[in-house]
Image (tube, rainbow, N blue to C red; front, side, top):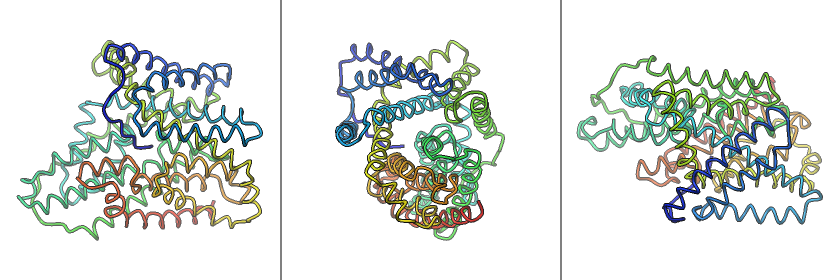
Length: 474
């Protein structure tokens, strides 16, 4: 997901905003319903209403969009104009791109409902404090687990939540008054959170990365992607743990700690199991895919979570506040995410019509090279500031069906999500590195290059090795 600097609100006056914000929330609700009707039933007649709802939301929030979002939208408009001139059937390509933008906006809003339910939850806070207060010998592993587990539920909110808990737990007093030890502990724990969060993209169906790859790469099987992505995530996390043990000094200063209790994490694992189980049911019983099940069930689970905690009236009030107050503040994220999906789809159409696929066919690239180079390409583009949503969409669309090149589709898709995850932990333009930078007082470039650069490089090599094995075995 992209990083967006929202900046101060300088839009309409407060009374006008109180009128426009609920209307914006209602537009997103219509968008959510429209995307689900199309996906689960195959009824395409709701497409105009779905796209109209997205357009209405952006129009209502346009006066408050930050400059960053306007830059992205301007690029999108320029590519659209070029597409209208260049493509033989521009209408089809533009409508497909708009549909992808609406899908991503609905997914983002749906996942935000789960973050709303988790925000301030005693269960979440208790589990987070438990992980942050582990003794030095297992603190890194605990925070890595936290980055992955909390990231599944809170997305980028996990980095901010756990990062704040790191600052609270890592006091100067707990470091024996030694600021050097305090800084070392902070760096280790923040890196653990970042690395744990980044491998989430390898396997989790609650991520944009998983959604894009499973709906774009022909022949990708999500069960295999989840299974092998999970194994790859464990391998990369083990690599991170080994690097931490070998490179970080471990001063022997007594630290306050509490026993690790799996019971504190059990409700979160249960929540994830419920999301996955119900989403799988939707996948099996409707025309939709697993990711459409996620879009459907996550808001309903969030509503039920709040109702079980504080009653139905409180839960409906919180979800109403989410739609009417929080969703409008997500204007920049929705605009940039939707535009990235739109751009990726259009650029892929332009490359296809310009003969890129034919050129690849003629190049006769070795299948093994195609399999292992994908994560490298995504990461390199990320270092240049490219959103992985765009680079992954373009690469997936240009390759089309990997099987025609002799590459197993799941191996190809795994390479893309690996690259996405490693970009999240290394790119100076990624939201996660920027958040860690703000928490530590360093620049995002320093976090991605100096703090996590060795890990990212070795992880890329490891991922290439795993993809090579998958190519020959699968």
